[in-house]
Image (cartoon, rainbow, N blue to C red; front, top):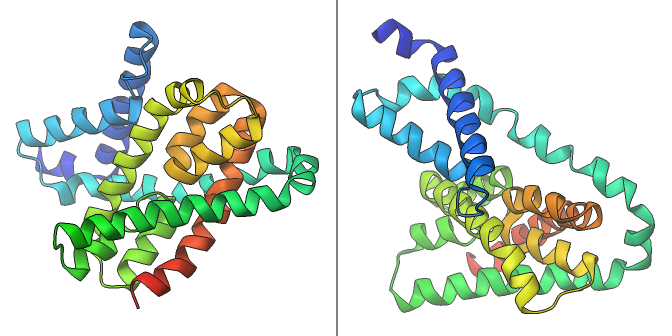
Length: 227
């Protein structure tokens, strides 16, 4: 059995199967609370705990999947390019909106970290929670953060955003698809963007655009907060 766990194919197969089960469960129950990513995480954690499988063994394959994360994020450029005219017409509100979103996210985290007297390492780990994982990991590690904490914070933020986004859009009566997409991408990165794409093509494209802009802005702002 140890030979099976040590194979990279084990981690890859388990990850794909767990996510597939999450998608099937969400389709059957038709509930936003049944997020496929969250279900996959819970299933994999349960499997590793039940059979006492070392995380390092699972990550032999998990790391292979993680390698495709950055290219998959870059593929969002296709949807952005399809809406290039909207970008040209709304470039100023888009930049201002993403800047305000990044400032609000990082500012609130920084204040809460100070309020609860968290150390610098934990603060650095949590500040980039609202941007995509590849950028968040780099920001965290370059300022002495704890990368696993950053990854967990990013995943939790993305899942929460994808669940709450449709409800909040209706609650605040956001009728502009550009504003809706930017707000989702600014606060819940790629996981939220997958939900934005389901809401509408324009929302998905603007959410993907917000990922890139907010990533750049967060890198710049982190130099101020974590100087």
